Image (cartoon, rainbow over all chains, first blue to last red; front, top):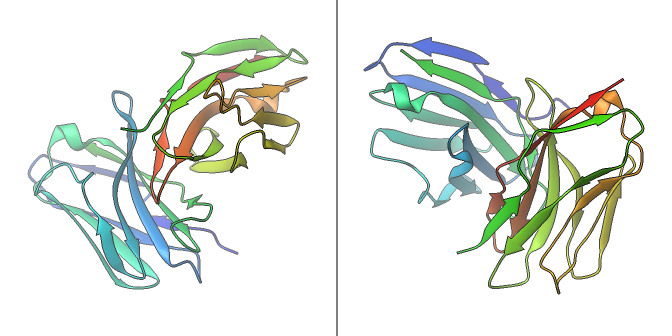
Length: 113
Length: 110
């Protein structure tokens, strides 16, 4: 089992650029979660999907953030335009259902200069 | 709303010492409780969980008991190892979402 796969593992970009983070959930999992981790705010849930449908995006900080899940094996989190305060580690997690144990990917460390 | 409060870190211990990391929660319903561990440069891994009052979760020598009367889920280990050095997160789930505490860094020295 490959686990949750995230890419890239590290991203350095300049303010104003578009950033796209990618996630491949564990095969057979129907729920997918995007989290952001910062020193100041800890771990925050941004959005989650059940069966490719966004269920709760109340954690998405602003309109600059968007997430999609076009199929059961792929999701993206996009920031456009990026700002220095978006610098954080972004985690993707998946589970069989939203009530089951979540398995986390290794994260993408984003630095916006 | 629901929330989780963890003790401040870092916690610094010598190998074979006893570990306690305190966690209390606030929830309107009957949440499931979790401890996750994050090793340097990695994502979070589920360490243990408990789904109802008085349940004890255990794994790799770690234990935590769901105490409804004190709304607590303290993590304990009788003898820590250097390899246990990591950040530990307490979390609750009431409906679909996990709500995490701020994390407690544990440093174990030989």
